[in-house]
Length: 124
Image (cartoon, rainbow, N blue to C red; front, side, top):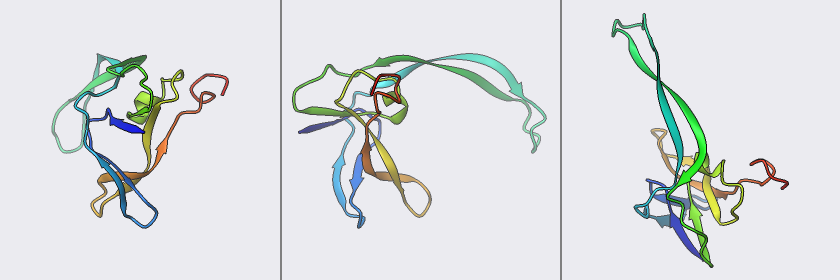
C-alpha cells in the first residue's frame, strides 16, 4: 500500500511505546478545503494598548482542491479539516491522536483516522 502525504507537514506515526512506525515527507502537493475570507470589524480596546486588531471572517466551503483521483493501492493523508468534507472516498485518511513534544508542538500521531460516511453526512 502506498501512502501519499498531502499535508504541508511531515507525517509521523508512532507506536504505543513511542517508536516511529513511519516518517513520511510531504508530497509537495497539498489537498485543501476551499475558503473565502471577508473583512470583519476589528477587535478594539485590546489589553496592552496595541490598537485595533484586524479580523477576517472565514467561510469554509465543501470543495477540496489538489486531491488526486483514486489510484489502486494508494491512500492519501490529508488534514482533518479537509477530510471532513470528503464523504465519497475510502482512500482518504487524516492524522489523529496527536503526539506532542515537551514544548507542546505536535510531532506526529498514533492513529490514522477516517471519516465515517455517517458523520460526513452519508448513510454510513
